[in-house]
Length: 133
Length: 137
Image (cartoon, rainbow over all chains, first blue to last red; front, side, top):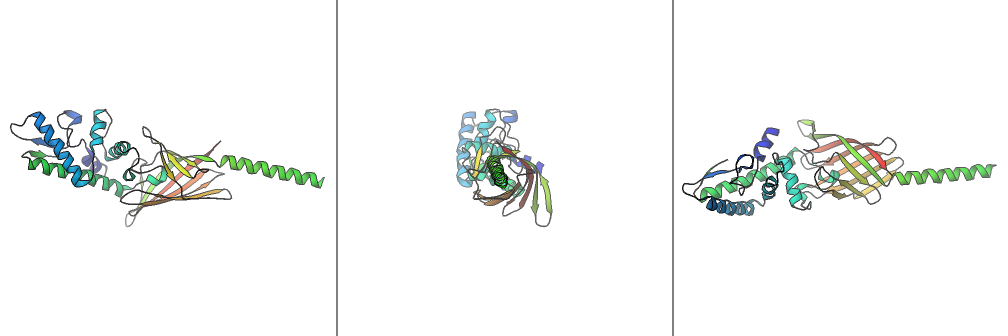
């Protein structure tokens, strides 16, 4: 279960592309002759499209990674998303027992992130990129 | 003499009652164990992180609030819908507004021993929690 969580939760959204090593994007994309600026613009456009399609915006995770915060698991991702939402989005839980969750809730979070990545992959492919996850 | 004893008894009762009320304003509760129970496979112990629970939370009896402050995060507050004090026990329940799956929670605290037993019901599973609470002055 934990390995599954980690696999789906190795993050940076589609926008975090041009930074190497631990800040690498979850989706690798290649297109012959494309400039870094154009690739960044395409990824940003695809990020926005994926958010629109899935209703899930993990860009706060990317920002957290830029700030050097560990976001290696979906559990920590959820914490970052909670913070980005000002601790007011009920999806990320409330105080004390009201925010308690089980493994099915964690699986649901994983599915949201996975759907977002799948939509982003589709978008980049539509723009002529070869995409690997 | 009998009147004096009565007066002393009454004073003592008032003192004890006041002390109890003061102790009941808020409690600091540490969660020890969390078990997740689902159909077929039964119950398994899960981590506080998986359960999205801070190791310590504050039960504000006076204002009927549950507060938690996970390390590195802002404090979160949840309303307690119902809180009853029955003898030495505090009983409470409330609702979590999580989407897409709402949940209810309930707990009982023995104010003498501090023992906490709590449960969270979700559409997918039941979480059973144990812990210890200490009255805050």
